[in-house]
Length: 264
Image 1 (cartoon, rainbow, N blue to C red):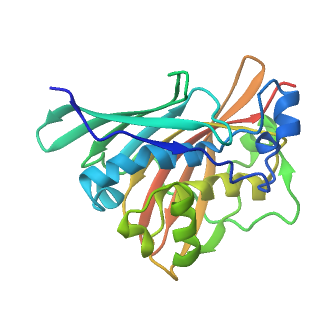
Image 2: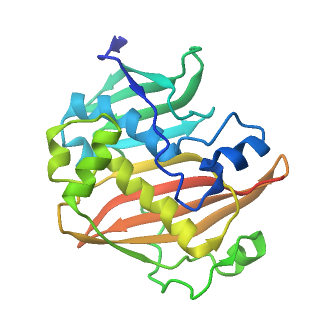
């Protein structure tokens, strides 16, 4: 039986204008046919996680799964609504569908979440550790086919900066005073791409995320990334990246899909 959770709205913020990805810049995005710079997909993902953590509690950060698809742009200053519904209870697993809609009622992002989540994928080993390149590598299918492993990021989480990030999402759950928000963690996958590849404006398309643990204040973690699937669609070059967020254990495993080279 479908059960609706408490819905909410939020004023979207484009917090990536200085990220290096020009798709978040008004000028470049408008030249590509958008109204303005795109609010990052990881930010929209953050909106989707709010009802999940509120409903399941912080255990969702350790045992949850969420598959998010970004269908339409979200722009700075737009008020978007987030709707979530329980659609299935089967055994010990609860399935929730969540949607981010713009003021026209159009679905900008869709997500399916499970708790407890799926087992961490065993068919793929963790991406190998590798040094960051001295200069950015070409963002081409040939380069990624030949050298699919990206350089490893080493990141230290600061809870004060993390709290600022969660407040920017208008997500005030108590857990984020001491642990990293899952959207902030997912954002590291974007940063890994930007730190390794000479990409132009690029678009985050989707993410399948297994949440396997929390990252606490002062904790250092690795972002290990490998390109696992390359293909072309409508003239754009797509890639699926296998991303592992690793402390002493794997705390997040991500299948991150991006249009990394756009047909201009």
